[in-house]
Length: 154
View 1: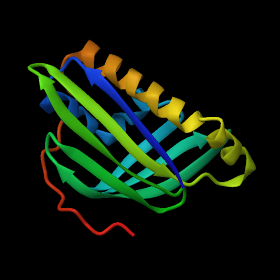
View 2: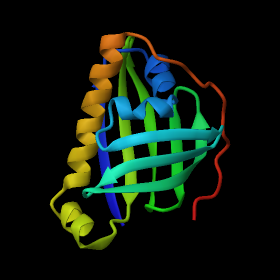
View 3: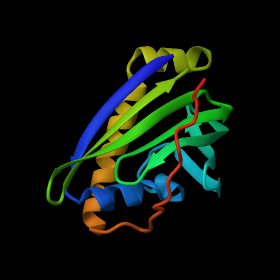
């Protein structure tokens, strides 16, 4: 497993940043390589992304979700990954978004990419695009304010 941690400060309130992050189907608008995210229900997602030049599909489960604080997930099949996104109020209208992910690269190409730091750069770029996306809009495209109690992560 490889660990990625990246943060970015966005010039929107915590509520706005969090609300936008809960709009999983909008992820392709700012996450490079992500082709589609389908929300199957309140806690299950199906991802399709291009990784190392190949399309991959996997399912993930939201394992914890606390409004304006955190969203945690784990893959339930396919590409092995898990992580958490946290939201911290820095000031009125300013939020720090931090992504922590554990990924398990598959095959030679993904392992070489991992060794060269591609996942770190990918997440950093995705956060920069999220910043631009939400700051230019000034408001979220939607919101889900429900809570998911923490479940055991294997």
